[in-house]
Image (cartoon, rainbow, N blue to C red; front, side):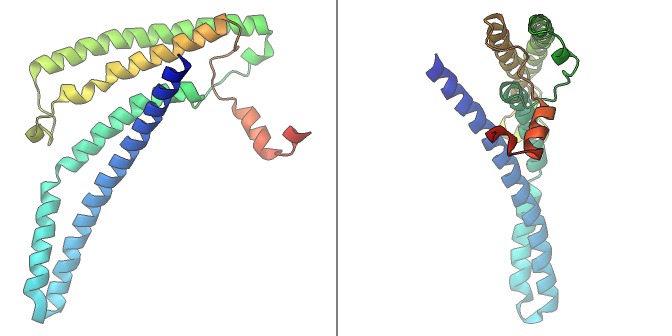
Length: 210
């Protein structure tokens, strides 16, 4: 079980890294092409003896840039996938903002009960959205609506939106894990980051060695 969990966590981190890299690469190429063809047109105007050569290069680069109208749509799709992978990742790594100052002033037994209630609320919320998103994606796939600027490659809106139910399913798995850990007395809270404690460690790095 631990091996499977580690494999999934590495896959999750790899997907997030891949999505970030793909977004950056696509945007970089598109911006570079749009800036390079203007550069060659400028060189064509200034150097008359080689104007045809630079103009030809500028024409080719502008053609490539115009063909990359799909880049914006692809970047948006990748960003959507990044969001829903990131939500689950944030739950696992305690990356979400947690406001639990009042909760921590109560006893451990009370903290445990409140954490279980909060976890149940998160599960109910994710469950409702999972059911609704499955119906929504199913309707999109049946309709077969092509994604803007990506339909030429056979990509439909439903193909992009499928990450929504997947993301909520991952969230449910994470909170079920947290609920189990709370129930078995392995943790008290939802695993959310303690910003005050982290800030204190950063401000006084020597304290943890005392």
